[in-house]
Image (tube, rainbow, N blue to C red):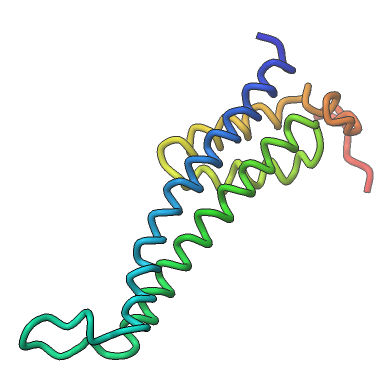
Length: 143
């Protein structure tokens, strides 16, 4: 398989992984909704013979759920954008950083991150991203 085909597949995998991040990040909407219900009507959450939970409980529930949704959706959108950058052969460093971040999201993100880093650090990527060629290893780098 040639290098442009590998980059095309890598961008598609970024789209899929980004969609999965968004999907699993949406699970936090359940906690966000329950937290908002606690805030709006705490007495509805009290069971028979029990008092209502403390006022801060709804805010805590909503904050944790909202944070989870924000993190999942942000990661998903940035991963999709990274796939778009790979497809357009732009922002290689951004895609490498997103590959590193995705390595923490097991198991699909880890595979995606490893393949992203592997493909984008190959010497051929400099030509496709219109970067200056790397100097040979025996020559010092000019600064």
